[in-house]
Image 1 (cartoon, helix red, strand yellow):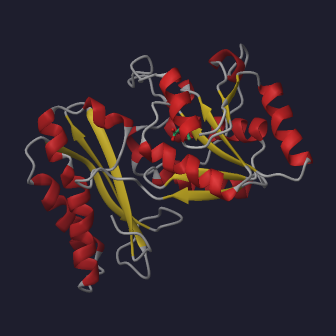
Image 2: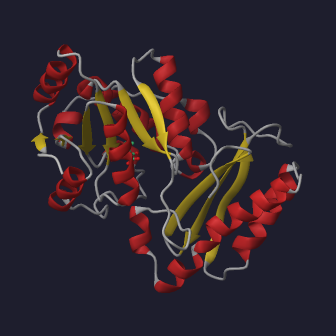
Length: 288
Ligand code: PAF
């Protein structure tokens, strides 16, 4: 467990990072919105393993919430988060205030429009613009050498990779494997909102991904067939309502009809008001 320094001020954060980098030491960064679970902590450990100093940010970013999405309801537990981050090896937590990140008069936005449009972007039109904007700002302040993002938020990871290339930012982006509960459900802060019925049926998301892998391993490459097989698994659960089940190009997220080497299967499913996401790269190295 490390001693965790907490910084709220961007200039102080920049100075801390600069001091490390001037000494020839590298900075690994994990941006979060808090409410940390084992999935986040695995990213902190990965950042620590890939750099000399692991930094975490905790900031519930208003710009990535739509008008229908309840920003005020987003769970917050700063004390608990700081203890967990320290335990996972973070040395510094950057915890800015919303008024510092978005002061009066703020108007600049970063947009990655093509990657942001499909999948989750279809029902959350402002979301990825808000993510791209805050991530760019956080990179400017934290000045990391390496930044780690969870593969569970696959579309977000592609958006961040693209903006780093497009804006020529000098940070290496690393994807951290999705961490799962013993029954296979991907860890998420949203799992806490599920009813007992929803929680037990939520295993259908990973079940659908595994079914697609089975068909893929058996040689199936037709996207309609693979999506159909996955949908069948989810539809068998009475509490599940499918938002989308899609297979797309793994990097560009463009639609594909058949899978060449690899493609991402991404899905979003509602249980009541709670929307869960999961994904796998069929033909990729990691299996759910
Ligand atoms: O994945 C998240 O928690 C957020 O989208 C991020 C990357 C911290 C930006 O607010």
